[in-house]
Length: 275
Image (cartoon, rainbow, N blue to C red; front, top):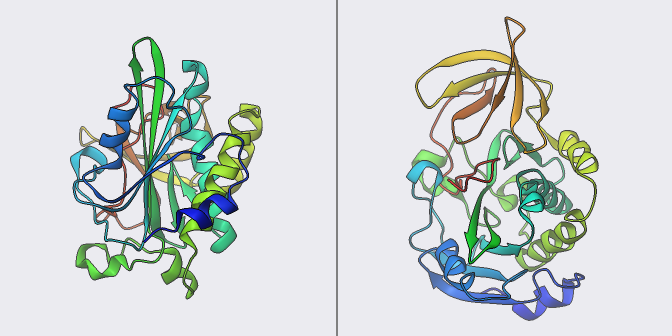
């Protein structure tokens, strides 16, 4: 069971993550957060569960979320829409730097998956809503902390956990607190600084990539930079630059085997469409 007291002792934020809505088992933390966001004043509240039974995966996929081993949570943020649009860049920086405290070498695979080595350990969903004229972001994050995804045969070659990658049991409470401690100040820094920190952890920027469009098209290019919204700018082999939205494409470094995604992947969109 998650130790809420240990988590709060490790927390240094002024407001983010100070309120924790904890559940041993829940269908989806995103669904609970969406209900809580209907009432005024939810900014900074975190919905956390030890187990999910109906988590939402990217493009409708389900995902594996065993009890008491990993982190499944949703952060509610209420802010001007212009600030919320930066979350697809800001949030993965906060998360990857927190994971790197326990697993050095963690990287970001665009748009906001976190990888350890050549395998995924974390995925995110950022949904933006307008509720009674209030822009609200629901930031869902699933992290494989101490569970072994390889118990699911279809994940054995694509997923890992912090414990599996490091050989030591990871501290869930310290990790969640570190994410909040990182994220709160990042929400107020310049986007240029956040982009620099994102690029330093990216395993895609500057590399040759293969772009798989949801319509079935495939082409190669070089990932050159991020747009302010977090969209990826790819230079095609003919020299044209295209701006890619995560809802429309999947980008893989050249040479990566295209296989089954880690079911702890959350759907995400670098635009505020909340798809």
